[in-house]
Image (cartoon, rainbow, N blue to C red; front, side, top):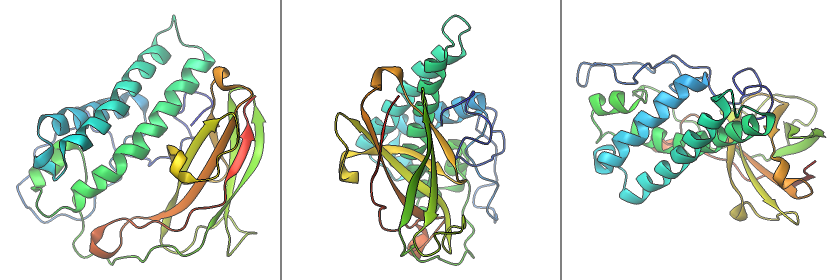
Length: 258
């Protein structure tokens, strides 16, 4: 998310434990309950976690129940993150637009990689050791599946200033409350940037997983005058088959970038 260094409350990602090198020794197939959220909150720790995830997945995607094209997708968002993170942390190039680009890259990387991480975590064919090594939590086999949300999110604009837009969300069933619908842990937000408003999430890309409303999105100076169109849908932690569930898409929200 934009604003500041992206490491405070404005970020819509899990508050997480540090992973260090992201590889911890585990007893193979030992009984475990669900650990703390696995995606680190600090950028430096996130950098280590993401690059470890990318390296291991690229080396052997089938070990984690994924495919070579999946690994290519993860490698792409990791390369973008590495470039933008290096620019934003170099004192000679650390500018407000550079920080906004870094935050946008982190949001995109998290939204792209997290579904793969969940898939690995829930895959009974992936060993506990491999799950731990790539930096995902081990599932709790006793977790009760949660059905997908049935209501839509409603997005609204709080403010739009240079390099930053602040958005809010509500549930269509409870528009006067900030509460998410039952079972939802976050709002999956996608974004499309263009010279005209987007009308379908099929033209958008993953942006962030918002857990608090309002939330801040960084924008780039080079996109000034264009439309940023947002789509959102509620997501659960788990569902039938141990897979996270998503609800219906919201109506689009288009905002001119300033």
